[in-house]
Image (tube, rainbow, N blue to C red; front, side, top):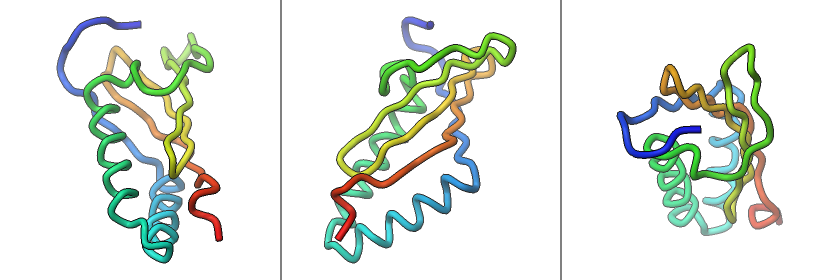
Length: 103
């Protein structure tokens, strides 16, 4: 795993994750939590771009793909992502809403 600062990572949100985030945004709006939800998402995106290894906790390393798989969460959603350190890309591949967005 890396240490120190370097160029920013590019974050790729899968189509499934983009759809999940749109649905979660609608839920947050219906519950009057749109602003804190947007802030949480923006903060997560910033951290993934700048220091992805400081987000969440490690799950495993896919040696053949050179991908570190991690999981994390905040008050609104839980997520799983992979970090390709050599290409400086973060792949967000799962995002599920937390109970705070449920009725």
